[in-house]
Image (cartoon, rainbow, N blue to C red):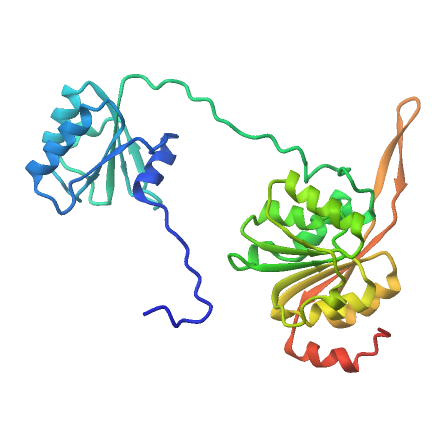
Length: 324
């Protein structure tokens, strides 16, 4: 029925067992699931006894208002620890150890988690990232647009929380790729395409993406040469001047958001004609002065222009007073 629906987005929902395991900080890979929903009571109890004999975690899916006496007696006989979780993911969510005092299961969907003996401590393996996207001075890059404050301001004006799931984002003049990588730290579901015509910069962007352990399509090309039929939900323009902004606008859908950065106030003013907003970001770095003072050394101001692509803006590209 849904096969012909345009722009259909499928969001997989977490299983009840998976959510229960998350609440208890457990792994459910070895757990045996016994369902009392829609099954004969005696058959389900026999399956529970068999599962409890395996000495691995057992998860029971309970019926609303189910009698708990028979289940409780078997859990006691197995000398197992147990938790009753109800209303998972709702405002009525509860996790209880003293569930055996209750004669009936809650009316909300409930799960009983049973495990034997004390838990052995588990070491959580986390592969350390060799690339710190939020470093004030990023590696492999000394550009003004890679400064942390500038990247955060750019990403914020793109409105990452408003992007649809799996949104396609284009980054023009990506340089070493740090702006796009910052976006992916906030929205890892985004599909990012980075354009960088300079070979050494494109190689650095691809290397940084690998180190950050994210999937990015880095293309060594100018925006003017990029597929004219490609359509994106948003764009970041960090190089190529006003011509690059025009080309990016032609590839972003109506309603999509575009943010551009400049060091030249004149270009920023012209960009405002198409995007509608402009701001100056002035930074100064504190430097110690003996014996106990500090002075602030100003950095090159950055101008940010941003806005949504309106339908009329596409027509304005040809008639705009901007000297492309």
